Image 1 (cartoon, rainbow, N blue to C red):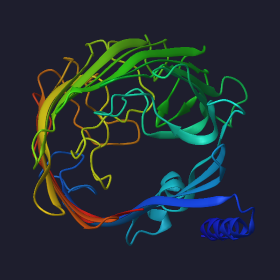
Image 2 (cartoon, rainbow, N blue to C red):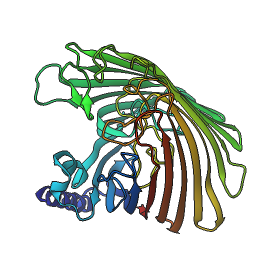
Image 3 (cartoon, one colour):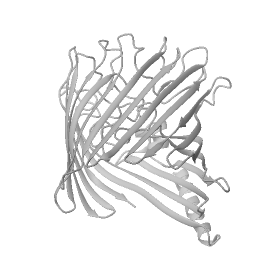
Length: 435
């Protein structure tokens, strides 16, 4: 509680100082605040006969993210990004646990960085705690590293009118309880190309994990020596065939022995694609698919840092309220279709999503589509297992900045082994205020 009061007081002081600072300084606020309730059935166990904390329960929670940007002029800006939540109604601090209580139940700093242009150039430099997401086409979030924040320096500059360059260095992890081999450093280079009706962003990333690094819910390196890991990928989207838009991603990655507890290292790949049709007045139609490699020895899957792979609006990391099973890990294939922004009444729209997935390995121990680091509840799928999902989501835009949303989801795993596979269901509702 003291920390909450301190942060609120600090924010108030900063705003007060800004009001009396140089006339050039402009403070801009933006944010997304959400309050939701959810009823879940069989999340985490797929068993109608077993009662757990995630089974057949109703909970309410809220999360408020607020960005304060302090713009001195077009060349210098700083951002302070705070987050409060997710807070479950009625739970006291002891109900969260130490880590979740710190990051999930209190007001804390999500990002804080300085951004500026190098004098007499168009080179943009960002230093501090910022979004660390590898490039993608935009249809799916990046599976190797996506949707996370970290301490980094990022430099972006145009090379020509159509070609740019982005270089990033981030220290994703550093364990304070050891003095050597305690760092996980990652480097990224991207060359985004923008042509008429087409964009492509090839990129390469290289990571160095010390022998004493752990975090993100798993030991990053369990070997006695430094582990190296790298990825090469490209995100692509094309709208020159308007009203048809095509998205695609390809990533190949390889890691040394010891990375993410793998004794023999790993290497593998991911490809995903989506075709979108925008020619209808009342809906946007989509067909999509993805394949990520895996084999029975556990070393045929693409390594990853923190997956954010999702299908928007689904129970695979796609909920507007974060009420889902989390992102997918490598080792699966899926196909699906969606009709989005279905609207016949002003301000009221619907999304319908269906998908089917299977694993790409015969080994249960190495099954993909499984729980991501951080404790999600995705089913572990072998090549003999399957998962079918259907979602129906409704959005009513009460005001330009305020929406009421209802999410309904049904998922049915089919396991070819001694494992409960009853259907899981979700009903969620709430409000999102975006400003």
